[in-house]
Image (cartoon, rainbow, N blue to C red; front, side, top):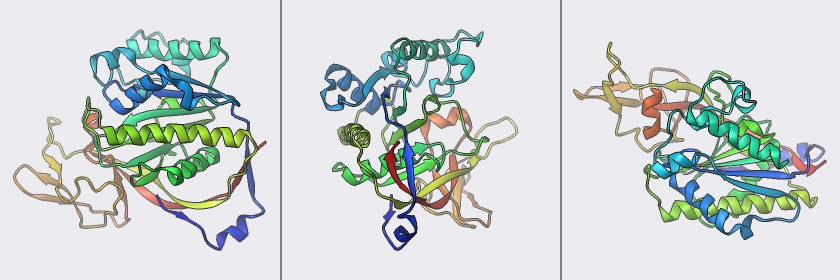
Length: 320
């Protein structure tokens, strides 16, 4: 992720965004039971919370989908990270599958202890070559953008870092990030499902620890300076080519595989059919594919997302 420091600061010096003091943080691991970095970072902090315990706010660590974690599978009945709807949270959904019950159970736990979160950090892994991906709803999440800026600059276990925005209602889904004013998913990869890689575990752990330091500093009155950064906004969902029966007829092209965040232009290869024919990108607009060939997205009829690259000017931030 590129952060730019140039003359635009002179135009932003008079701008100052504010956010409310953070009182409660929710750290989620195991939202998907086979994404092992989040599972084990959560287990470690549940066992020894000292590194994420701060004076100015309370952190609650939850294992999102404990039954899926036990079975080392993404979910039991349905994808937990699509179930954080108002209907499910308030208990009016008549469906009784495990994940709907689990969402309601977590919400009741938070509400009972008056720990409804101001910030959600949801830890995920991806099989795609995404590096350190930070997913937010849109560019108006100034607090989250400052947090990302901070943890990227502080990282010692570094990896390419990018911000992904899911601002279009056509592509949004009811996920854990929606239950707090400030919601952020940490998507780290590439890591196979059901596998724990030490390097990615270290990256995840450090990002969480530094997130807590940022929040403590923010609550203490530290002002975060303005900055400029790139972000990628989802524009299109791209499925694999299929026949009339719904069967996949082509694979991710070798020249696209593992090239998440890299530009594709008209004529660039996207897919390779089983008989060796290349299917190319046919649009005029430059786009940036992400989550290329993500294993868990096969069931969602998704080969990759296309995104539009944007440059954001982020004002300084202080506590209200």
